[in-house]
Length: 557
Image 1 (cartoon, one colour):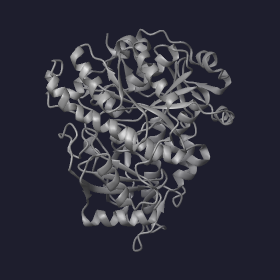
Image 2 (cartoon, helix red, strand yellow; image 1 turned 90 degrees about the vertical axis):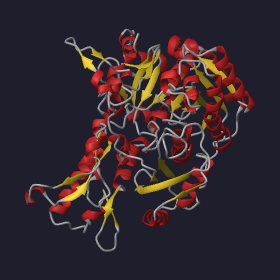
Image 3 (cartoon, one colour; image 1 turned 60 degrees about the vertical axis):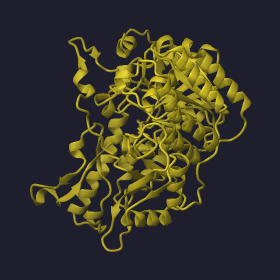
């Protein structure tokens, strides 16, 4: 059965009844969106503040490949398994973007018998959070051009506007556009462009804000451009836009609560990509889950060089969250790909390629244990074509590095197939009392923060930038000295070249652009040919998605 067929065959429980039964959440504190999804009120979340936190578990992965690793599937399967073992556990996930749903992936709610449901709703419009984020972002963009059209009292230089518009779809034709064509009635002609919504600073703010007041304050600090002459930053507060933006987001900021196929609770809220943003679900959802449950399983996007690094160096640094252990998801198929095997040959046993591809697993594992300071269990996400010899090789390589590798079959068997993984993770949590570590110190210069991530995590020999970009880094580093760095880099490789598989070393990370996200509180650094507006592939998933006369959706995977 396909993922969507499994999801549509599931028996769901009314979410209000399930939340009350499992975690004693009063129904009056849930705002229902139909029978099976709801928002949790901020008033109730404030009532939880005095409770002790549960244990936070981070799920990350090796560098993604066309073969897939199953990070979200593992997060759901592990959470279901821990509930099966009698531990009160909640999963925290990001909301899927329509871009990859209609582009390459076709969905992002897990897979097989380890999914969050209702799968179609979560993958499509869900509770409207992304629409609200896009509307708030584009309201600010409209107010910039409106201000210039009505006299430009702030003296904004149209050539120095840095705030683009957004749309939650892959559309390469919108990367560079010309605005204001058609005469003076349409404002001033200038160059502009679009990012995908998940790359919006509003999305980052949404996921890092801890309250409505914090949300509004962060929105007010967004830098939209610079003035003529002295190049002073112009903010959303200067344009008096932040109040209306917060009003558009006042309902969206409440976490969404849904269930897994095994009727366990999951909070699905926010969704920045980890290759072009910080790749973590909302702080509000994570903190809420920690107050409700003994264990919280969350995922960070893409490989451990991107999502996990930003989870540690941005989300944990800003909030004081403390992960107790990490799970590194790997598949024999993906590691054979990193060892040089083409996608059409991945179902064939190839021990030599597997051994060669293990360098990718080893670097990620070393980064997690040595540089992030987290105890780590390797999850071998099992596929039906995996051979016993391939599994043995993976377990031996992990053991040689001091890690345990556990085979998990949650895709086929749900939580039952991940019980061994759950036991291994629980054992590592009990044995660990050490705090995690950050990759770089707050007081480092911005250039040195970037270089430290590149050399320590990516295995690079150093970083480079054109003189103009180097000067911008110097200026932003002086203006925002305490900000962490969010490196936007291809997820397909440790380098900036997506074709470089395995664990390349000695490469140079080329910085092409730098932006400040003053409201989110970090500096975005674009490395290599990184786009913040993806394009659709030759054969997008949208070609295979359909709906029948009864309203039944097909083609989402």
